[in-house]
Image (cartoon, rainbow, N blue to C red; front, side, top):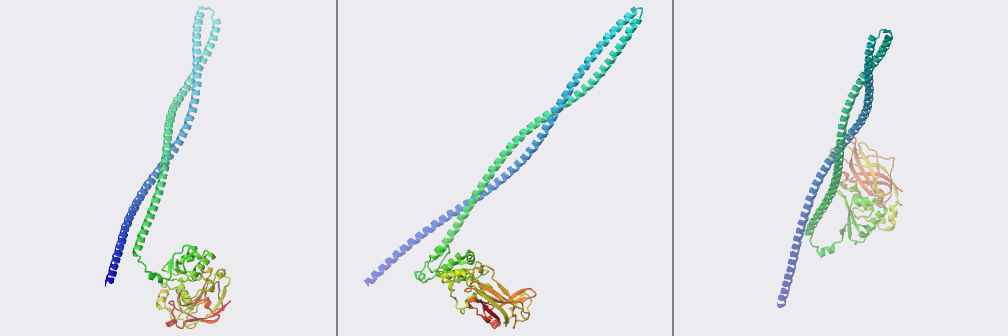
Length: 551
């Protein structure tokens, strides 16, 4: 009893210590949780501040851009006004030059007219002086005549004097006429001079206005240049603000992503349950992401890569080295492929040809690829697995298969069919009116496992048999000829359709996918399956009769 009580006390102490340890762990975890929550709140506040700053910077950048656009428009208007003022100044300068020339010519005419007027006045004064002298002489001669008794001598002198007087009078009259003409010319010259002086004053006023306009245009140009410089500086500042805004938005987005990642990681970490060692010991396959072949090949053989089908296609298009890397990896590791979308499937022959062990498909969509999957696993009676071809296990055969060194030519003649049922009535409601019999047509498609898998598969079609689903006979003269570059993985798909002449659509009656390695030469019967891979009901006896020749 004492030993048992002692052991019980030890157990109690051990449990107490263990409880204290777990309590300390919980307190530490709670403290760490609180600190992380505080950090998260700080990060959220920082992100909100950055978003707010980014919005403010965006508004400032928009306002600056608007102001820069207004400055640019004002600068353009000032530049156009300066160009117009410059053209007007050039026109006024030309008018001023012409007016100066007219004034100079008017001054020359006025000077010549004044000279002529002075000469006319001088001639008039000389004529008046001469007339006065003649008058004095005439009076003197008259007095002498009165004093002389014999007037004949004096009459001759009088006649001579009269002639001289007449000559002087004519000279006087011509001088008067010249004076009048000179006065008229002087009046005209004076009028022209006054007009020219008026024009000169107008031109001087225009020149002063032009000078003022030039100065205003120069000031406008200076203001325009300043506005352009301000607009350029504003645009540069706007660009800098936009860059800062973009950087702030990027930083905010990165912080937001980091916050989301931290929250998601915390949530995942919260949901993680401790793994039992016994559970870990019985786990065989562990998943890992595909990063590079060097790292992937160094992983343990129990590692599984999950790869979407678009990555399979992308890597297959790179060439032979990528195919060999896939095959080498799948020789000692596992690979699972899956469709990129839940609404469609992909060609499973391509990952099979690269050695992938798990090829996932969407069984919700009944299409050709589901039929190919059924045909692949029908090779060994639907056991659930099929062994890999030899070239996927032997490194020396991969290059031969990739280079298509061992192709097989397949010739198929479709002879007849038997017991082809009508599709369900609900399908006919979509494709046209329901008929009493079917119009069968056969299509044969080869899905190869070579690099040609990336291309559209070759297809052969027979002609349509009218209203005969019981025993239609085609007996095609044209052979369905296919060249299979990789017979180890290739699959032939036989499909029988009901052709509707009204809607020009085809409704699937039955199909069968047969691997090329399972094909046999000679006259063969191809059993048909419905879209659910069953042969029950009306499909129980449906089949095709064909002749196969392989080279």
